[in-house]
Image 1 (cartoon, helix red, strand yellow):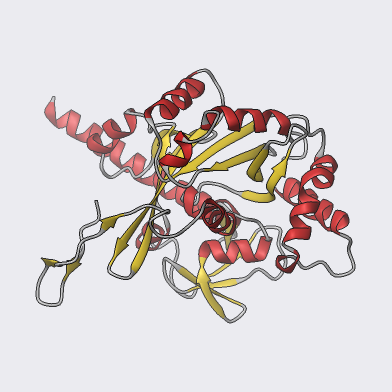
Image 2: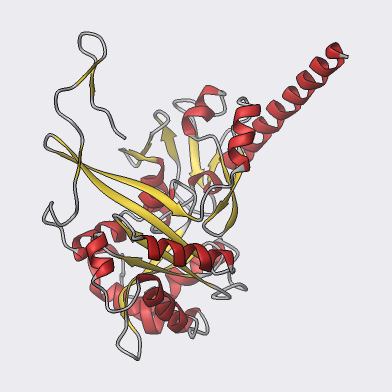
Length: 345
């Protein structure tokens, strides 16, 4: 729950409230939500995904139509299906999750990266030509160059489309859909459900994004309560075991990153950026978020910035610097715990 607070004369609750609303009440259609997510898919994944959107409104031979299609850092093809509000889910002739499974089955027939480009990505490039720097390349040539670069830099050429993933997005889900998704996850299907809820506060609109399924590992909460100094905890993520890790603000508190530091995106020329604070960098004279910088440099739809940004001073990835610091904290905590146990004896 979001609580609006005014702090001009001490903290007090504002008279206006944050209102729950729906996309339909805001006059937004499913196409509006789809287009927003196409351009801002990174807002859903909380810096944990590297994705390249390669398709929109992709038809299969049986006239089924998938909303968005992407490649992930493992070379898996990702189907992203979007429903605006719960009424749209209930009004479908077939269940939301079953519709997605049918579309994912079609994507399993894509044999190699060139096949993906020819059958899916070319039409996407043609539809959004203004978003690509094409030069003298044809759309197929450009598509093959982009996909090949993405797979090579993510070391995913050999694992291309060995599996397919499904991501369901809606402002809310009915119980039957969530029950079916939970059962599919339990039986090994790589499927996730995310809720994106619109909210209003005065004239402002907010989107609250949260993953519903797969659920966090319950052990995460035990660890956090027992050892609050340890900032990482394992959870079952979209593609298996992931870790909730400290973010930029904590890296700056630890002194691993500070304003004025220079970062670069690995394997990318002319990618140097200056750190401004825990939210922004300056790149080519423009201020932008860390993710916007990574996306602009690579051309990818979403990027796990900690795995791709390298500190020019140490020449280490942010993820490596973070892991080293967390290792130090863990060792110190273990030493303290051992000392406490010895004193207790």
